[in-house]
Amino acid sequence: MTWARSVLRGQRVLPVLRLPSAKEAAAAAAAMFAQGLGVVELTATTPDWALALRDARREAPEGALLGLGTVTNDTIARQAVQAGAQFLVSPWPAPDVREVAQRSGLPFLEGAFTPGEVAAAAGRGPVKVFPAHVGGPAYLVSLLQLMPGADLVPTGGIALDAVPDWLRAGACAVGVGSDLLRPGAADRLAELLAAVGDLKEEA
Image (cartoon, rainbow, N blue to C red; front, side, top):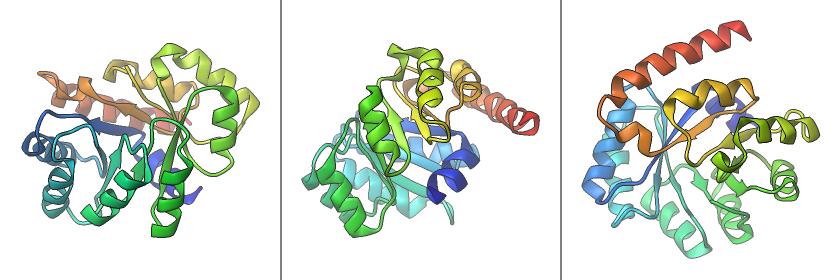
């Protein structure tokens, strides 16, 4: 899929930001953009997430993409579109969310875990493999042996330090959440992005 290959594979790290307030979520998104990341995912589990999305979009640099994750039904999906989401992410198979994304012309990262779920979603576009930490990078390798070329984005319980392992396993990009918000994360993220660049050169 063009979006997955040009955007997700270009960045390789997808911030998944769950914060206790809209103000903190918008600030966290701004911090990610300041670090040089061009694609950021807020989540519908953040209180007043629509406000966070609007505020973050308003302050985002030109060309940046801001999406909404944990989109579990068509109501949230429609609200996300109205709030300015530029892509949608579900944690599991969500046909009603997929339909809203298609109608709105937005990229959709559909959640899946079992081989059957992943195969079905991969036939339509990029797949959020969640919760990825349950199977680890070895599980991703097994999935890609069955589905070579699939754009898989493992997410859930993944630390920054583990991202290179997932990329070597074949991940299109890696979703990272709470570890991006810990003290010292900015320096670790900068080191990671440099390491990701080295991985690209090796490839």
